Length: 453
Image (cartoon, rainbow, N blue to C red):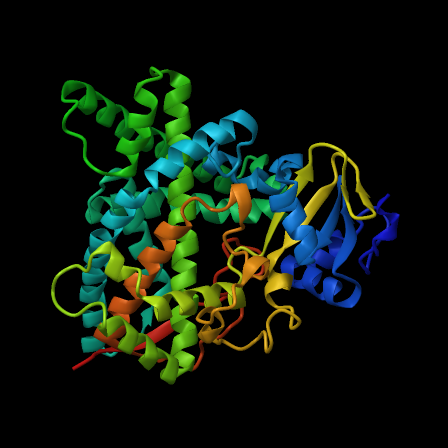
């Protein structure tokens, strides 16, 4: 059975490996164990046992070759279920298949073409903030500004929300929910004790649900009143895919859950990716100049490049992919065996939880020479990265919004590099947050900005 797999060190009676995991960032602790005893180890916490792996062949088996034998581990997502509901990130089976098909159509090429104009407008609005900081000489918190920008982009692309409404409503309702959910991952009692934090969370969740339901009902009413007036945003695409099948409270809830999933996955991960990439580029001015030169070939005037031109932002894409490899914004995912399975000589009983450790895979020197170095050229060669690079997973459960996120980020990064010089403050650090996912900086990444001549 599983006894042939080495056990992770530092196991204690009753609590298993929980104390060791809590002593540092859990993905860093498990990465160290895999280096010492891997590429696959066993660990236990109260109520659950895991196989943790960075073996690319085992990972491929779980997420591609035998993907139908594994389901998502809702325990690992438990603290976020209020935010995500029964959206694509948490569903399985026939519901997942239906929702995946709907969202795949929502993220089709037409939506990607629209993201260019939305992203450029967002960069122009950010430019006003950066210009003010340049005049005052005060450094700007890049992470905070990237969160605001990516929330504006996903809110406009999803709900046609104007930026002032996005700035007023979503950070106030959404960001406190994400912050509290991350705390509940490691302090689950926070979800039950009648504390002020719980009351604030419940109130914000109810207000967010009411806000999104109001948007859905208003749009549905407008579509029924004038079926020809269909703005090209993702809410409209979701509703169009449900119209033929009728409408019910369940349909309403599913659309609301998908909107919450888009807001979560479409802004937190993108903002962290942009923050880490710009942080890395300011440490290597020569690479930043390469980015500017590449971007100048695409952004040649005041107009918006077409989709085919934007796809040529190759170096910007390589910088973003390397930052995802180096900083591992989503370091792990967990799957649970829905049936008895085998991988080679390893028998995997039903119910076994498999922790796919992307961070350990991305930092493995056997796959990535000098793994701690920021080297975008890794993603510019002819050799495919295959299953050595998995920030968006792969296979049937790959991230449906990955092309949206990467296109948005390439545009934002390129436009900012062409418009500004960035000087990091000395206090900036590579230190990552201990437990928040997506994994952002432990402290603010701040920079002085100066408009380029």
